[in-house]
Amino acid sequence: MTVLRFVRSGPARFAAAALVASFIGASPALAWEPTKPVEFVVPAGTGGGADQMARFIQGVVAKNSLMKQPIVVVNKSGGAGAEGFLDVKGDKGNPHKIVITLSNLFTTPLATGVPFNWRDLTPVTMLALDEFVLWVNAESPHKTAKDFLDAVKAQPDKSFKMGGTGSKQEDQIITVLLEKAAGKKMTYIPYKGGGDVAVQLVGKHVDSTVNNPIEAESHWRADKLRALCVMDKARMPYPNKMTATQSWADIPTCASAGLPVDYLMLRGIFMPPGVTPEQVKFYLDLLTKVRALPEWKEFMNKGAFNQTALSGDAFVEWLGKNEQMHRVLMKEAGFIAQ
Image (cartoon, rainbow, N blue to C red; front, top):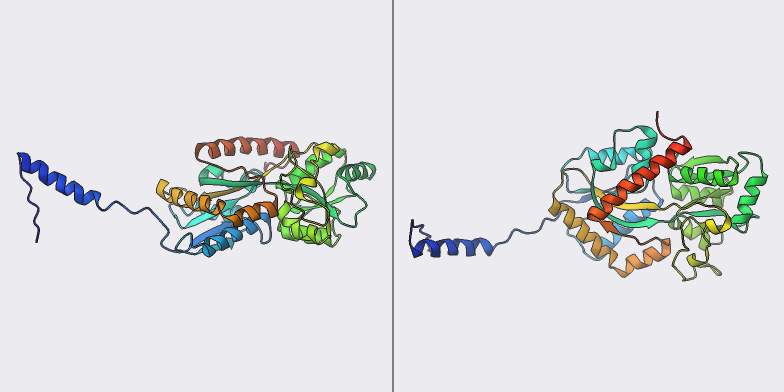
């Protein structure tokens, strides 16, 4: 049996100290990782873009054994996502909970006055930005965005029905921008999630939508919907054919058709407040591995995402700027809670 003896002075004292240090150095602290299932909160309805991305991440993490514990996706869409945000905000210090955010991160507290701000959470990473496309039914007489704009201008106010996710959120903000471009009001009809919105357009219950690509992609490929334009500064860089005749890259920008609308939506990951840098690093590293997978590249192509990714100070700076942008847009639309 080896006994360590501490001495007060002389060379032996330093030898003993070195021996102790070697024992300490031989057993470095293990990096943090989850010790129980991780709850992945989706502050939106099922079938929408955020829900699809969360469930995709859940699946590829399990398939590729990227972590020992499972991920459990939970939809908490009440109050335009406030239910989910307040749940994560209130779970201070819990590293076994993450939330995927869309731009309701900004719009929900502004529109409802709910006591929540993105700074109440811990930013992890921006995974991507989601595009918005102007869609009509495949049997619609509107073949181009210009056709659509001219038709809206020619009709009485509120003749056109625009379907969208929620009230005073991204889809309705875009609808207001389209109304300004046309000089006419539309009738905005809110639904619970992007999946529902696409189905309503397929069924001709509304005249148009501004769904994210992934929310309408399957109906587009099935020849049920027609894509008119994308609300970005440039066309989407995905040349593979999605339908018999079109790729995402074939869809023109809305601005080129006289609709000066430029709007992208966040797909970001946050944690509750009070978690440690080591715990944040685990999820940042995990999601970096996810983004390196071929499955992720296929998912990005399928959903035509803008693949901008940020973390750290750059992500925080982006969040601050976009919060202010939404405050201006919502004030102009009259959507801010009094």
